[in-house]
Length: 150
Image (cartoon, rainbow, N blue to C red; front, side, top):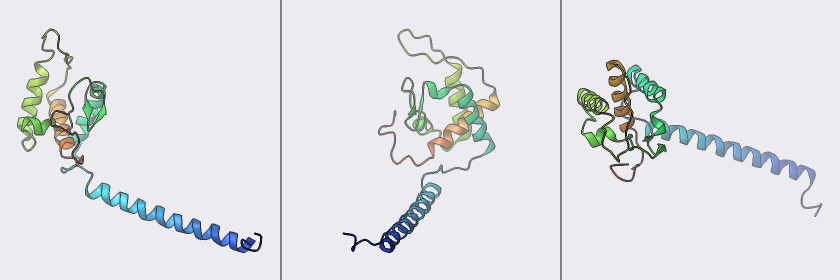
């Protein structure tokens, strides 16, 4: 056995294998980066208003009840595709009006139903939240959620 794997052969196997796997790692990293940039990002630009909407989403802990692309709690509806469901994906003003109307109507007071708390959100924040949800709706989720309602 000692004749088959000499010290220099073992070193060559080690270096050759290491170089091979570094090349594979770099190639897969480049492919992943290209896939994320070209296919897995939202179809609309990330603006200051979208960023503000994300901050509103985080500050009010919306993820504690809602899901966004399958991540979060399952107490309330999925919001990753809410603008498509509302037919407001391409109209920022309609998106704002529907979201604002929905938020103003909460809590509904219907006994036996899950209730959304009332949040004190400014008009600027509400518009930003609508833009964030429009932005999230344009992300290529590869057909997630599996149904329209999430």
